[in-house]
Image 1 (cartoon, helix red, strand yellow):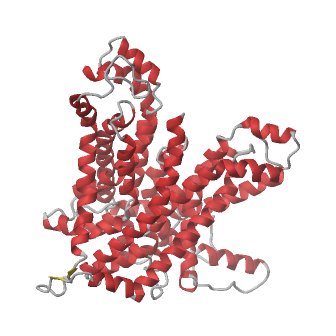
Image 2 (cartoon, chains in turn red, yellow):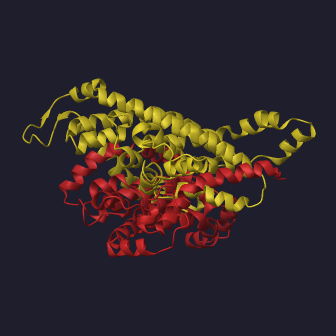
Length: 270
Length: 319
């Protein structure tokens, strides 16, 4: 019984939407312009279209940064899943005693500001010679996303109907069969949503990346900032770089809108 | 598999013994251990290290002068004007970003909860700000929107002034004239979609029959909103505020790129101040002490957060 908006409110809704979307639209539009057309006042949205900025970016070697970002995000997401899925199983389907305490322990690590960990992490990483190494970021991103993943996966696994699990056990099905036939079909969409959230947070992470990497292991956000300071301001090229590095998350986010809410609220809101 | 014969927790059959054997307890715990050990090593050990470092006088520009200094770093943290300013800035930044984005998010969610032409598209466009990489968004605001010479804001103002026959519009240097609002606006833009998504989920979980009954009873739209929708949304609003606070308190990207904490220390928040102490002043002991203080402050916020989340949790468990 969803009610309809009146034409006036529909207009307001669209106006607000376009106001929020305008900076994104402006970023994408400018990225397809020449520098001379990008920096005019008043702005010129209808200037000629060109791929020149993107070509320059790739010739200025954005590729290694994108590869570092991809490696850090994908590997840390896989590690998170490998650790979080058994954990979530032990917190929902076959819960350990005091499982809520364990849940809150994981969550409490998210409340500690990352900046407070930066100094000791920096010193330790420097000591063991792992500065400017993608694997350092992978370990940190795994720790950063693990609590979120545990909470999300638990909320998905908690939806596996208990009756079916018990029925399967009574019928003498072994653990692997139960996991594969009963748990997996319910948990798969949750697994996908969890991976997406972990990927987004790792791909966008900046503070550890900028302080713990130098030349070899820098990721896309670090490229963006360094690129401004090294080359002065080229507005169109900046917009092209910003569009390019945001693209994977934009595509993934648009594709999985419904799952985003649940992920962002740690599975607390369905 | 003996684990499979363990009684379900909710209704233990009376014939079997109530307490599980030690072996079966451990079998339940095993899947949990890798993640637990990993989390403790990577997140708790650094904190212990921070505690230790915070009691040292340690500046790497003065090598050989590293010594135990007790609580003097904490005395410094509590008396330093820059740090006090940073605490205030953090509070102002966090409170304004979270409250404004919750209010805007609520308005947008109310609109998007109703049907209108292109609703799906509008929702997709609205979440875009949240998906743009934060560093990219900050740079975009700083250079493409706030720039006094060719930013979108002044450019549009200029265009409008010309439309009405003026020579040119005003030239406002947004970031240096209004540093804190400049940071707040860019963050509100990023966080409003997040609030909208959570509140929209809450609106759509509203029981339709209650609303129908209110309508039949002739309740006005305003009364329905105040007495039915708002109380129902309460826990969603709380969740949005708490999660928003946890993330916005830690804001680093936007301050680092848009204002570098300036002008002066007008927009220096705690994370950025700690970063400066660490990587510009090289005062490791002070930075660690400030970090510990931030953690203590966070624990206060977290206590409230946990209580709210626990209430959401109880509902689910009791279902």
